[in-house]
Image (cartoon, rainbow, N blue to C red):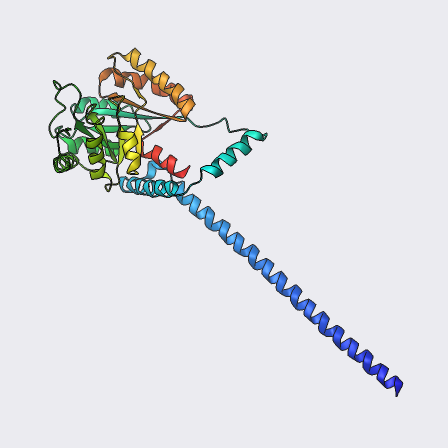
Amino acid sequence: MVKIIKKLKNKKNIYLFSILLLILLIILYLSTAFFNFDKSDKKNLLNNQKVEKSKVIKKYDELKTSEKKLIIERYIKHKNKVKSSNNSELQNKYENKLSNSNIKKPSNITSSIVIIIDDAGMNISKLKDLLNLKLKNITIAFLPYSNNLDYQVNLVNESGYDILVHIPMEPEDISIDPGPNALLTSHNIDELKSNIYKNLSKFSNYVGINNHMGSKFTSNSKSIKNFFEIIKSMDLIFVDSKTSSNSLAAEMSNKYNIPTLSRDLFIDNVHDKNYVLMQLRKAEKIAKEKGHVVVIGHLQKWTIDALAEWYPSAKNNGLILDTVSSIIKKKLVN
């Protein structure tokens, strides 16, 4: 009888051991399956990120005007998002960590120059001379009261360059006429709106606006505020020509989240090719220090001749030409 009881106990232990072993095998199987699923999920996520990245890094030369405007819209949304999040503390922590570590900041930062040619539209022959230089990327600002604008704008579009509406604005010197439909500090918001729409209706396929003259208008807080209030929903870039050191345009545009560039240098205030070359070389130095520089020239023979002489060497030195929208795109992506 005692032997029978011992046998039963042994069978019971074997039975319990078998159940325990089975439970362990099930746990091991589930753990392996979960690990494989997690690994596969991570792989799919990385693949999706690669696809998304390939979408962002589309060559700028392939972009159409409509795509450029989408970039501007994304830029505005991006600025709103950044503005709403308080990440200054994290940024300071990162910079402190970087400065205290042995990590070196990259030295091979690409330098780029944004060349804007103002006062286009008044001389078709000089416009063709400029386009014949076949510069990689420049921006042309057309005076909206010029003749044959559709023809000239089409020539620039075929070259793949950005176009701005060079809207006349009131200067400090009352003896100078900025042109028809100019924006004046005496205008109320409805009068401003009427003149802005008149200027913008003269041609199409532009990515933004810059000011023709406007030293008085851009320095008047009420006028420039009303101006940005009107254009804030148009998804346009604004370039401040900075015809006055007192300009409030860049400061005010930030409040309306309008993508804005400010002129760093005029290259042809002196009507001489050698002076323009000197200014272009100065612009190169600024670009190397800042990463990019915005310069403004005019559709004049001395400027065109200087660009023709300067560009090959600048290109060999690794300098990149950007349009206003391509530099905005870089700001967005980076």
